Amino acid sequence: MTAQTPAAGRTGDLTRRSAADLAAALRAGEVTSVEVTQAHLDRIAAVDGAVHAFLHVSADDALATARDVDARRAAGEDLHPLAGVPIAVKDVVVTKGLPTTAGSKILEGWVPPYDATLVERLRAAGMPILGKTNMDEFAMGSSTEHSAYGNTHNPWDLDRIPGGSGGGSAAAVASFQAPLAIGTDTGGSIRQPGAVTGTVGVKPTYGGVSRYGLIALASSLDQAGPVTRTVLDSALLHEVIGGHDPRDSTSLTDPLPDLVAAARAGQGGDLTGVRVGIVDELNGEGYQEGVRARFDESIALLAAAGAEVVHVSCPHFDYALAAYYLILPSEASSNLAKFDGMRFGLRVVPTEGSITAERVMGATRGQGFGDEVKRRIILGTYALSAGYYDAYYGSAQKVRTLIQQDFAAAFEQVDVLVSPTAPTTAFRLGEKLDDPIAMYLNDIATIPANLAGIPGMSVPNGVSDDGLPVGFQILAPARADDRLYRVGAALEALLEKQWGGPLLDRAPELVAGHEPTHALQTEGTPR
Amino acid sequence: MSTISREEVARLAALARIDLTESELNRLAGELDVIVESVAKVSEIATADVPATSHPMPLTNVYREDVPTEPLPVQDVLAGAPAAAGGRFLVPQILEED
Image (cartoon, rainbow over all chains, first blue to last red; front, side, top):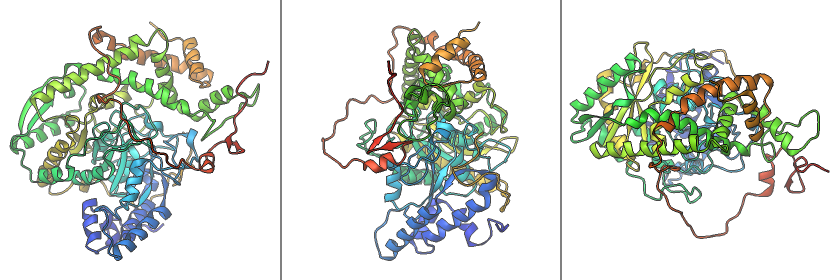
């Protein structure tokens, strides 16, 4: 591998451009999709040894799509606006013909026979799929350290976590290995990685993007969404993957709001008449000083842009984390019952005693699942078991009602709610691995939105005292995702005007040709 | 005060069909105890008058036309199976013989 400065030459330029810019250049015939796709594959080859964002790189598949798009464009065909712009997909989303593991040994080597609906839509739009990104096993975690295939490293500091569970998607986009990525967010797995890597992440309204073909963690909380470097790029991607899907019975039938128009309107930086509510419960104690300072500065910018800023109280949010860690494990313990060694993935046959299906299931799940997955399945089994159901799962469902009522009352006063996305910047690899509660606290500001089904966005809003990025969270009522884009794009424009460019320009340059620490394939080394 | 004993974890693991090692049983008993203690606070505000919410969006049943479509080809489905024979999944013995 040649050591070459990634920013140099045409290749480097292409990887640093936004998806919107690439789409325009492709339409104008200035570049081909093969050139754009190859530039990103070269970048992956150069830096992913150090970052380990990808579990599988699908170069042949991506280039085949790129060639097809280029040929169709040359023939004068009317293509989707994002046709030819490559994308990375979180490994919890099934992709026909491409290995899909959800970060687990129990699915090692499994190749799905079908595409998730959102993947079908990416393919129909002519978007080359660069590969599958690393994640906490079955999306359980906030640091990607629970992947069975090794850690992903934060491009801002390789000794730190990239967030989780979608650390691979966020790190890939932050390190210019992909202009766009797909994430999934059950309690913050798109937004928190966005915050700690200086990227944009959006959790759409529950039901706004089809869950068909997502390997379910907690079905009443899961939602797929965009991971990008700009708010406009998120809007463009959201419009590709969003909208009703008859194969997902919880998919909303309402048409998507005009998200791209909202983002473009926001870029003007005028928020006159927009009512912004600061959630008092999601700020203060437990939030790093630099995180709070950047938050206050962003609030001042929004106010200067014409927004009416008020404080609102959501008193039951103090119980959100507790309710989440009962509801999620309960649903997960049921959803993960299908990984039993019978129909797909790993099968472990006991070496002694009778070989029955039941004993094979126990052995397969004992060996195939990692520590965090076992912890949550057992916790969920406990919360759902006879005698405890009412006290735990039943009570958590009532707290969910109270949190929804808090949001409903708050949205009577304001158009959007805001908070820091995560209480701290990226922590060091290994720092919280032995303390599940400390790990869970990372998602304290993102979880309420999942419990209520409302949309949320994280926008990079500076670096903390430690030089690491922080995120600004925007929440809107269900089905009003367009508000996120308007306010998010305005904040982004105001901040970039101050900074003189995107935040990621300040990230340290990764050394190309770094000695790979991980194999670029699914056959990684288990922890 | 310990609410989740090692024996309780073993019982739950059996229900969940997960074989755990001795050290896993011991570690999980301690960890689950801490987690359960911290999440038990939900009962403080979950009074009888509060309705439960199981799903974030108030959706009612969604119907569509019952149109026959092509299912996945059997060989594609079985391609990812640990074992298959005669167009079916091949699994270990399910019932004990008496």
